[in-house]
Length: 398
Image (cartoon, rainbow, N blue to C red; front, side, top):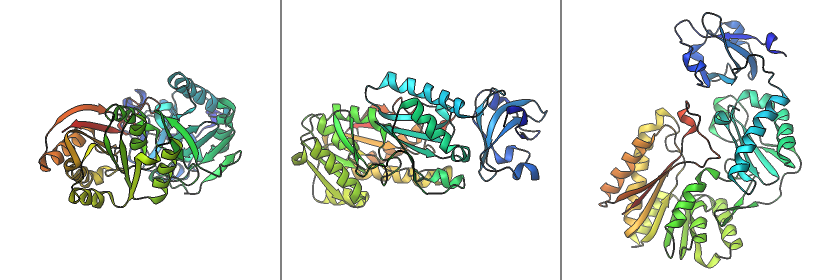
């Protein structure tokens, strides 16, 4: 289909088009004229978005089943959304990562911020894992996978279909091997001097969280000779980095036995089994138990899942973050360090910081906020989309 033959969708008369013209990438269903023809468009259809005066604004991907009914693909109305267009986007994304990183282990595509709305691609050497979290990407998935192999040279491309975003788009939760051969064992991933074991077919999300890389590195600077507690550790993100940075010992706490097993495998590969221990259980219960045992640590890190994944969940999420800080602070030795993280885009930095500081105070502790971290540069921020800047990390000296 050529741009001239794309269907047309239109903004309502009272919706001003400036946001789209200035780069905002989403159009919500209540901003569009949704007649029977528009509602009948198949999810993933490419269309021309017009303002209320019928002036063309952009090429968009439409999903009538989603609250985000249109996602901007290009302001070039002559563009063809095809294999060549995909390859150009991927080439641009790859150029940034190759400038940033010596090893091919990074987030290659961070959705809207890399011009591929709803598409997340993480690279693990010669394997890439795609999360197609928008209907248009699901429709063009074979083309995306082939363009990815052509541009990067990866031998295997996997589809990961987990996560809340696909459900909001009305998409399935079935993973697949798109190209090559799926790995039959976890992959070792070097990062910050540590070795992580990434389960690319059965792990959380794409198998590893690259976004915390700079915060792992900062925590490692605090860890020489330290006793470390890593709560909500997943595969040992902070604890293994801090062991690589010279920590004397590390205890990883998580509710997932398989994640802790992968963390232990990473410690073994690093030759640090003797300094590494795990404790499976509910994080809140384990922190309460550790306090009852009188245990203290020089560095405590808490990196929980998103407690506030939406605006509706914000207040409950902030209370949960406050509780994390309140339970973690008593476990920090005098003069020690507490790192608190949030991956909830609905909880902005100001509110997260207020909840965390309040929790520390309610634990009877006080301290200096010494560092505020965010996601690494392989997770760029779309300047007009707050959701793309979701990760926050606060480091306190108590």
